[in-house]
Image (cartoon, rainbow, N blue to C red; front, side, top):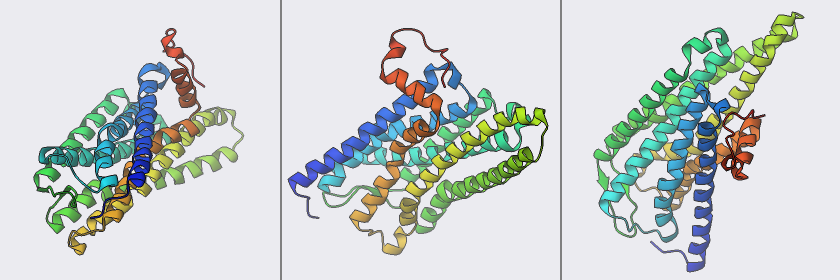
Length: 306
């Protein structure tokens, strides 16, 4: 396989390096904000924290590994590192979608059953969700890697070979089924939110109007997190479709196609912090305080964010 000219490789390294830096820094801001500011210590934000940790590891570990192959079309890492990379990438992707599934459940109770929300979703429940998510993700990553890894030479990338039916079933249960479940939950939330909005418009009861502000806040949060989920599915669906169709191509997908869909999927980890900053005023306020270094000048953990 032809290696790209030197100047092209330099430009690619700069481009991919920029994605790595933005991914690491953006998610580090999210992680620091949620951990430091007590106002952000909520079950929903703890789930967002788990998602940000997954995205941070993508930027710190997965993207640098991928940077080695894309510009040079060569794998120079040892076989054991190849296996580790495959296990980490699989685990992180599964972790992201499971975290998004839990977030969708959190939003369902917040909007559709607000009176039961505090009893059904609390910090303890969020902690259990996160523990189960990461346990399942690590297990899936190990299973996929154990099924079989082939490490090629310079012109062959590191990839996993598993039986076609196993590949299809794995993709279905680890990505497509959770994706369909999330879409169904958010559709249900959307329909309930629409009914709530019409109910608020058709009543003059002050008590209902006073509670409407809380409902409106929850709907805005749900809209933002639905956008995060939608971007995730847009970024990763091409990759999983190509992976599912891989046996039909005799495991010979063109390198430019496989690289493009893989980088599209991993770039999702860079986008999420920008979504939070754009839609959440309190995240913007937290980001400004962290970037300016204000949090190092005193104790601002109890600060009231916008």
